[in-house]
Image (cartoon, rainbow, N blue to C red; front, top):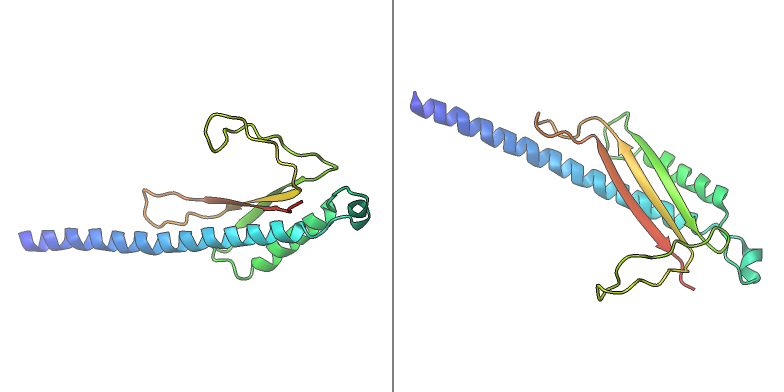
Length: 156
């Protein structure tokens, strides 16, 4: 009887471990998918800029066109996403250009002691938030959201 009880205990532990490994693999695929989608959205939205302003020495994005592109990419990627059906993906986009201005950097520099110089390169930052059902089947793990961001910076 002791052997049977030990066997059942080991079986439950191994089944829990296999379930966790499978769910963790799916969670990693979801993270990779959202990261790739965020990178595609940021890079694509950065392609829409005002050529006339650029020829005058100013850089300005077409904000509405960039948002339309992001929405198109998210709509098209719903067919291939590894997230469960019914998941909702929202986005936040931050444009930095000569018209809207640039955020000033106040973080410590690489040496750890000085102020970081403010960045004055045009950039598009896209943050994707996915709200979904619980991605893990085990009762003590509860992951219902994934957040990934990407930034595309244009050199000057």
